[in-house]
Length: 165
Image (spheres, rainbow, N blue to C red):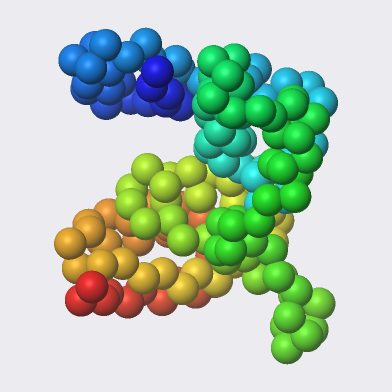
């Protein structure tokens, strides 16, 4: 089987063709795949990360239903609740910020920047923001920085750097 989260129509068409080419049924995962009992850690609060977690659960359930993995729903839920992925909507409160908060996220392309901007605006609507942004030279950094500037008027600083790797 193959799994995906909701996609733009063009990307979904490609995924459907690829799954069909190898004879794999394609499951489009939704938040329903998480189940009501699943408590997510803070870094999984953005909707796109919740969908990623839902896809992981769907994959585990698929493996388990075919006898390829022994995993109860409780173990799956507990594993997600205890998971940690550095720099994915990671909230820090370093002493040097004197009560301020630092949010780390490694958004690295236009769709992930769009998701990050939406999540930041939704979860921190009244907080002033400063952004340090880095991108590889093969990315459209100007377009991504333009998306970041949509955090105005609360965006107080945006620093962009490019890397050769």
